[in-house]
Image 1: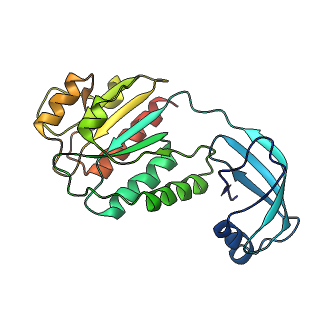
Image 2: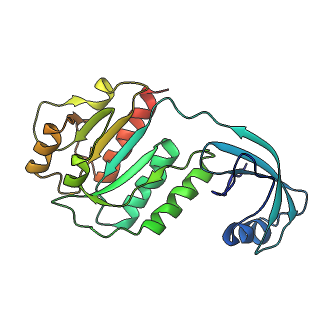
Image 3: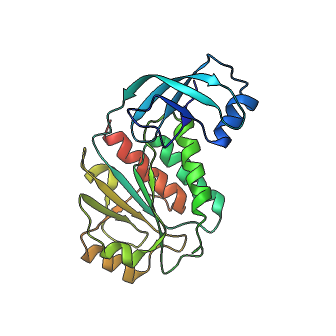
Length: 234
């Protein structure tokens, strides 16, 4: 089963043209023909079934034959993660978090961050590909990178957690996280959050949590947090 992505489809769409990259993939790579049925999501919770009318490699045209609204999950998970020094590790996090089930991602620049330039276009493509591969109807929202201190100062709601490496009395995320609640989790860079950043987060309502008994890489810690939230919300 394959899923395609077309962000401009709406509930009242009848006939449409795929973007050039998807058109090429459908006609040249998959060799789809007129009359073949495709499943498409608009990334906003609707799964469309469409019949190919013209399998052109530049402007593949199709018509909608059915629409299904997929209900959103009963919780919203916002992962706020410092980009890793190596791009491929952060892209791995984006891919796996999308597969597991994340709703929003914000890259944050911290005091100890080694990478401060983010290639948003590349990251968007990774997330889109992971959404299609895992057959999900909702595309996670990827925000522009922002300094951590600026992010913390913004209004927030729901459960707030920070996973840091400092010796402290911390409870396991999986033991204290609430089910069916909007949740924001901060994950720091390879050098961890600075003491000042940790204090600022705690002063602004974030609760320190542990993600196990071992020290984890940034991307691993973020995936452990995503997985914990997905499991407790089953």
